[in-house]
Length: 187
Image (cartoon, rainbow, N blue to C red):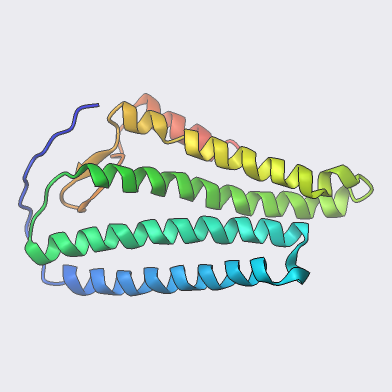
């Protein structure tokens, strides 16, 4: 992976800062709501059931994702206030976490749907509804989603896009683009 420190000065728009502030407010609200729901599930003994385990998984994924988005917005707001646009290795870390948590979040919703399907169609089979099996599925999705963005980072596919002021994988035809399509739409 090659790191490039290209100082680029794209055209500054006056509406960047108000949008960054609005985005920051929305991210803070998302972090607070995810924390409230997660703490309610943790401290309420009535919530210690399999469906709430799956909801807690979704809340944890949302908490990590919204915290990452808040860090991204603060990074972008700092750059907008000082009108600097350059590559930072912290940007790749934020993108790695964002790709990871988006996958975890999407698969957490998939696990909830699968659990509901099993509950209705395969209700006599208690093993599929057990805490142990659902915890195994949650762990499997977390492991897969943590491993998934590693090839993107080590092949240098995540790049700093100055006109968008963030790091992401540009839309271009490559093996990893097809790999992403396969990973996200295989279910």
